Amino acid sequence: MNTRCLTAFALVGLGVLSGCKETVDSQNVKTAGIAAILSATAENDKETRLIATLKVGGDESNTYVDLSGGDRIFASAGDKRVEMQTQDTGVYEAEFATAADGTEFVVDLQRADGDNAPSSRGTLPAPFTLTLADTSASRAADLEVSWTPSGSNDDVRIELNGTCIFLETIDVPGDTGKHTIPANSLKATGSMDQPPPTCDVNIEVTRSRKGTPDSAFDSESSFVLQQVRTGKFTSTP
Image (cartoon, rainbow, N blue to C red; front, top):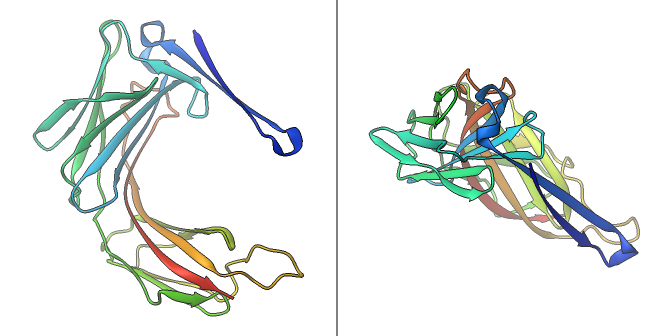
């Protein structure tokens, strides 16, 4: 097993931040010991990026599986099948020129010696257009967010982030195509003796659904397929 450690020293307050990434060769790990964290993400209507992160010791482990000894991982969508390329140790990616509703993606791990995992599958939810009722909105008023409804019961999450507000994450019940962010629910940063600030707020809406990892993998494996759209508005007091 190899270990790579990255250490960053924060000058403010002499704080220290450190992190280590361990790696292990796949030929030393059985397929049942590999947790495959798979995602397919479309950020527009034309392309999808597929990421496979392979770990040993569960999905929250910091030990990554480096494919070696003839082990290879492939991805396919429709009639296109490609070998996934190394993005980082234990992280593999592939891109496809499609983001269509219902596109099935398949991840296929082929082992030189051991059990294959050829059938991690999932379908992409429908693309959508994000619409904000206003380009500038007071935090003291309701904010209307809408998107193209899918007609299915996919999961929807809204995330708002800006320098003048605290991060806000909202899980929307049902894919209705709209959500109202209530007045005063976005909390401003700053202190009591300063006026509430104004800033640009980034909003990200994600429509997602779960796929099925191959049963040969560790039970903590997962497959999430999602459409992501972003927008921006000015948040005022």
